[in-house]
View 1 (cartoon, rainbow, N blue to C red):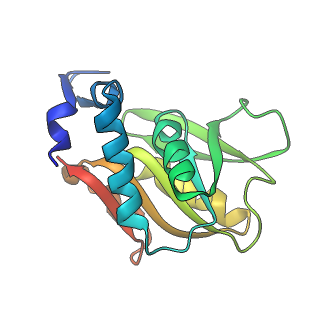
View 2: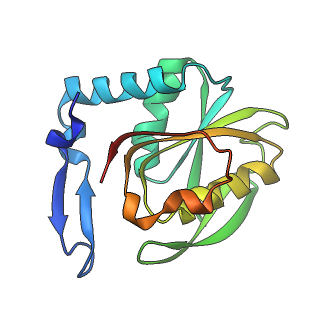
Length: 171
């Protein structure tokens, strides 16, 4: 299935030189959104997954329905100051800036197998930081699943060498 037909590419957003891949055009089509989640589900079906973690905010719209489809829990990874309970935090570089991510200290139980799900693998900073947080909590990251991977940005280089990476579309 060619999901790229449902991705809007916006040049020079959010700053000059960035070619933004807008997934909202995929999300608004219920059948294609369901197909994308189901295809990701098939891609990760052989992994033993206890919980899916998704970075704010687009990781929520990929990770939560994927967790539901797999019958596992979902752990949100939020920006600093957005979670009400006790948290751990880690800073990271974005494709175009810096930020800090946080997780509740009880979001992942020691020894749980965690799949990270997000809309996009770009430079790898967000996912590397997510891995760091999950491992600090005692979780075992078994893979990462994305709608899109931007190959030229080489985000896989920031991930562990043996990391299972699944993507629906490559640009």
